[in-house]
Image (cartoon, rainbow, N blue to C red; front, side, top):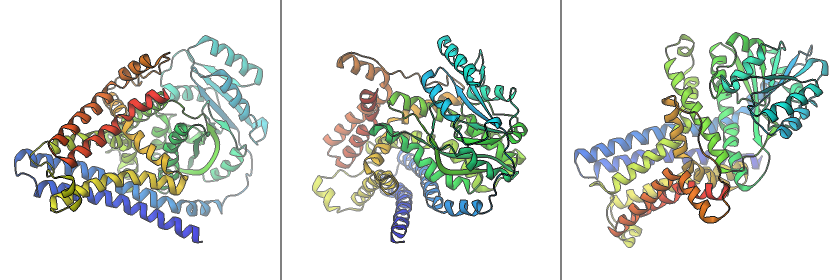
Length: 518
């Protein structure tokens, strides 16, 4: 009881921390208006800063709301479980694994593991959807499938990407339910079907999504795992209370009749998110089950993380544009306000984290080197905080410190590690330009691939050169901030110098992480 009360208190403190971040940004905006030079240029700067603060404030409040609301989800789920009944009959299930030029050994191991699902074997049918372009992989997997009684489906083109492969499978299958797993996911709980199928006694239930996590690995890969952990621990439960839980593409179970009525998987780069929306628009319900049944292969290189985040942000931007274009659709217009907010914030989420960070940074430079610049004070005056302007500058520093403490507090409370929380904070800066480029690429319908490649250099010099070439944009940006920070210091603008030098350090993390983790 005491432990629960303590955790509840800590959760409330984190919520208050996000509220403080929102209010401090708006207060600092007022400071720019009332204590800056009264020129059109500086009013314009203040106006832009207010606009960014309002956007940032909206997301901070939404994050705080989702985080606090997620604490009520287990109680909601227990209410559903009380009405579950044993299966009156066992329906047929298609167990599906899409593959594209993946390691054949891993595919075979994980596919065989899926054969151990606790379920009548005659009602299970296994499908290997191979879009591989490498002949040796196709030969090995087709031979493996034939020997194991697995239906092997290959396409000569990748139209529709993963969604296209799944839709092609629908033409060759008749099973009542589809259990979907990624190639790198190793089943650790064989009761997956036994646990999930009873929920489908509700005829309006379209899909169930379980929690997705990675196997333990290095400090870097475990930190990357927290990206998913934050989403599945806090965002998904809150969304599930609004019937907007996102189907995450694998480790989930789908009712075939609902999928047929929807028209199959929407053929976008993140087909799972689009499918979730279409399910909701067709008046189906969904459930998120916060339980891990399979673990994925950990992301061990920065390049792999970049490619993953590029795909996510490219797809989320596509989703945002799609959703906004369909706002007049009757099925969307009748959605509750919170459902609409859930979908919009999902589409804008990574764009907010990346683009807003970059814009705030540019705004900082403009403010520091304008007539509305923070007062030029010595270190002693800064400590004494004699003037209101200096006090406001300290507020600005406090806000930045609090933005670091927020993820550190979350990871300490829920994942027992402040270090990983700080690393998550750094990763958001290191990925900001990658995500922004992905958003631009999606908006212009250009190449959906990141284009990053891990080098295999044999010496330090070549490795540094390759890292510089790959992270050219981020390195140039952080170097510019470093120079501007030193210039501000020479002008005796201590606050401005600290502000810019800290930003320079954060954006240099792209170079450091790519150099260290490849």
